Amino acid sequence: MKNCVGRMLAVLLTIFMFTPGLSIDSRGKSFITAFPENVAYYYRKSYNQLKITSLHENTNVTVYMGEIKNVVISEPGKTWVLNFTKEFEEYRFTSSNWSVRITSDKNITVLSVTGWWGRFQSHVVQPDQNLGTLYQIPALNYSKLDSFSSSVMYSEARYISFRLIIINAVKERNNVTFKWSNEGGQNFENTTTLNAYNLFQLQSNGVKEIKATSKVAVLLTHPCIDTQQSCSCSMMLNQLRPTNMTGNQYGKDRFFVPSTFDVQQLLLTTNQTVKISNGSEYSVEIKGPNSIDILPSFPNIRKGFINTINKPVSLQLISSGLILDLIPESMFAACYLVHFHPSGSGAFVIANKSDQDGVRMNDQQLPSAIKWNDMGGTESQYSLAVVNGTESSTIWHPNATIAVYMIDRWDSDEKKPIHGGPAITINADPDPNGCVVTPKMYIVGTDEMSWTNSRQYCFDKADDFARLINADDQKKLVMDMTMGMTPRDLGEGWISLRRDLLSTAWYWLNENNTSSNLNYTSWENGQPMKPYKGMCASVYLDTNNNFLWKAAHCCSRKKPVCFNETRYLKQVSYLTK
Image (cartoon, rainbow, N blue to C red; front, side, top):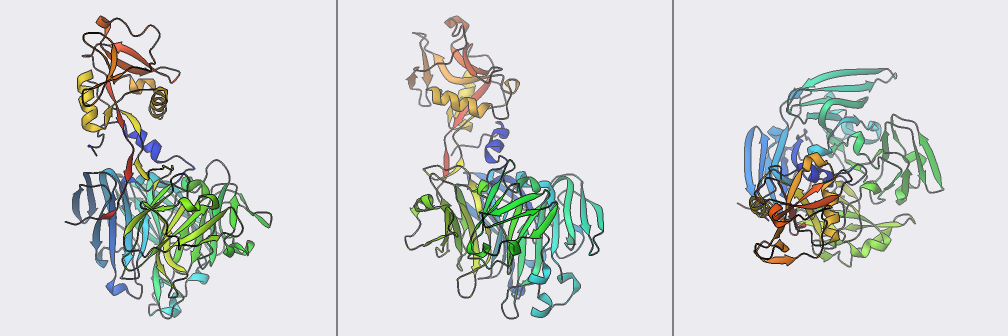
């Protein structure tokens, strides 16, 4: 693929990547995270990893953690694995600069992994555009989960409760306010100031809300939680979603509860009053702001029933050693990336019954041996895609959206997941050809130049100089250019249409200097003018959001209108040096 469209309008890509109420896109160019303390029974052998996957060729990636590490990943689909020792884990209850920051010049995905051979636990590091300033904190029932004091040798008070790590995601000071209540119901709040990219760790007891002046990342973690195995425990880790990214922001949503998990709590967190129903069988109203276990109100939920909720909420399945963010139906996506561990792991897929046969893994259908189990008589069913996990893979659907969870570890009987979470989301919209990393799109350069220089610019920075061959091309141009752009933003832009020097007939000039006939036009009234008025064609956006063409002198300065073809994530493998 050619060089990224460096100085073109990035706002268009951002709009296509995320729209409220749609799936959370895991792709980005800037990420921030941290490695929480891990004192699980294997802790002396454990280590931490970042798995950074390129989606485009010649991607320049930089990691800031103590020293600066940099690499240029030449091929799309290559994963750069960085190992970090336990010395990089943050165990202190204070502010520090022990964050890990990842930046790139093109979209990448980041997976954070902690553990030991056969005992890995991973979570998707969300890009900065998915972070927020307001977070509702789940009120975990520690008595149901934390039998730590009776299961492991440690008894220090700092290991009794869960923890929150708040990471400043901006290059400036950031005020962060914590709201909490004590056992008597009294409410308190306190504010701390974080320097650029610094973090703060505190015990989560009673904390209900975190509000910052600028974006922060929030990790909910425990260094060693009981796993219901004799004398053992595992680390617990979850990156919280901000309140503006917890489901359909415009109406009701549905959550599918996978019955395969050992459900101990079903924790609903909201800042509004919401109504929850499970068909005609059960219904309950939760007054917000609140964080409450709704499992007692829905006793059949372990069978995999649907919960329909009328307002945006965070719904988390709490199991032994696991906090699983359930993916609402409005955030189902078309393509996911799963980094299977060489020691064995799997994936969990939810699809509509009518769509299940279309689910693909890489370029193949799911193995025929995989069984689809009905989810409690609903219109969906799920499958445990236990593909002996030794390689990274894409799981996608050509014409429907699905939900995919990565399973890092199974129990000793290999029947129930122990660790896991939502997989890396690559693309929201289905495409029959695979996982889209860059949609077909018209884009506009920011600098004005001649028609000839605009043509060369588009071939250097994109795939083509814009050619509007038919009405569909024109509609696509209108759609792309009117998202986040005003007529003043665009001004006038060059397209690849020009006149023949001898016949003065209009034609499209292709990359190989061949011509295409002009069979479709969208001229402004009175255009095109006579040849001496202009031998090249430009477009402009009028006040009615119509793109009209007009003749112009080829040496006049206008912005280049370029075109990128659809790009797909075809293969994923590890980067070797």
